[in-house]
Image (cartoon, rainbow, N blue to C red; front, side):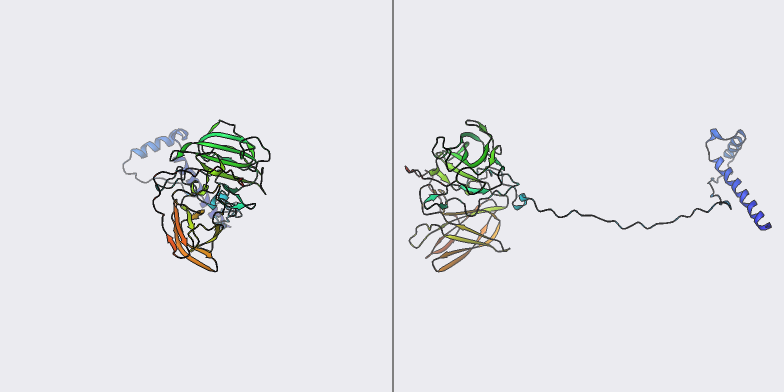
Length: 380
């Protein structure tokens, strides 16, 4: 008991000293006058150099000492969202800006009529030059898109047709193009006017003689006219707004950046273009394959580029090396081709001479589209 009393006295003394230290560190305005005088004398004395610091008071017997506990933090938990399907736009890079003219003989003047967030390359079985319904030529490319997808003008120009009857130039609800729009563009090619055609639309947002800019929404994808499902039929016409003056749009639409176009001239043993010949294309760095057919035998409405004189075109090929396989009769021939981004790669094939990979000879100085008095019935 005596030891405990002495211990309590010591604690009281320590507490008093702690209180005294706290007072000397408080604001001067709150200290008593006697303490202020003592502090002034102490400050005037040159022998005082020590600084005061508060002392930690000892806990009273009736209080539980405060314990500092270090708690280890819980591990961080990261919650990742479920992987979403990649956007459709990731299937191809952005387009080269138009006009894109990598060589003196190329003419990528137009953007795509379907936006970047949609599949906007031609359907494999509905490219330019395909023949349907016996001798009916496909004078454009079909681009798959859901009904209601916005359709955009491929370039600036003046609307020259809106409605049904594009094929005949007069109102006709049974016209194969269905609800269609045509645009005469503000620029031409070697002195000839350029037109683009948009068929099978569900709605149209423009009117005749209206001026539009490239990228303006002119309507919505539909399934009007001769179709088996919703898609956009797209044509490029040179010189006259007529199906017989159509040319392969894949040689006129700007390619995706870093991707290119493959064109070819496939001949038979007599040196004539082979119709509906299947060409297979294999990427050397992956298991991807492509299949394309040469133009049909029908000549009306199928026009070759003045430089390439092609009868086969396939666009939207990523830059790289490929193997091309041509089946001719009972035999097959192969060659390697390289696709450069933003350009047209080219080869010719003859059963006797084999493959010749490289650009064709320089064409004549001026391009004159063929003149025909026949009017085909195109399949939009």
